[in-house]
Image 1 (cartoon, helix red, strand yellow):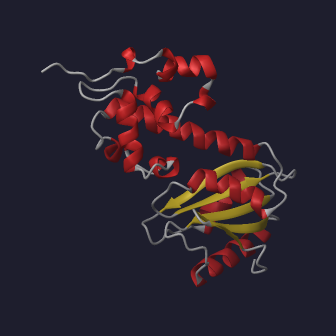
Image 2 (cartoon, helix red, strand yellow):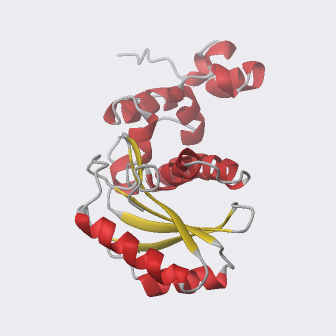
Image 3 (cartoon, rainbow, N blue to C red):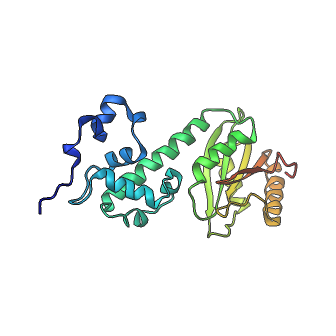
Length: 229
């Protein structure tokens, strides 16, 4: 029986992802078409677009969910081998970094400014991460340091390491942050005690802890905004 499957090469030029991008620009392409370009080619039974659509279906048609998949999880989709999984992961990481770089160009004026920066960095983490942003006198971020990474339920932050890094990067102000993979934005008693401990230690070095941000997919929580810093 003759295989009547239509390959991408047989499609109209306007329907081929690469050609469509050249003609109309990347914004004209669907998510599956953009991913198909990263994949490059399909399999003997599926086009690159078909593979991309299957991958998106596994991710609930949500790019944010796709960004959370590990290389092994990406490779569970037929047609996605190690090389293609690495290409997709690299493209998604570039997207995160672009978002973070935009935040680095601006002075931090509100909790929303710094929360947007941290969310870009941590939103796809499935485990808890404690990070610190070190700010200069103009309140621009000099450096971001991941202090520790833990399990799904928590992580540990050593004040000595945080302040050592602050001195190394000539920080004037410090913003603490950790994510809650569970989605909850409520700080624990341990979060409050740790924040107080780091703030008091920083004051001895003429540095200010100006906020502690908790981020999740649902938004963010600012210790400073809530008046508990």
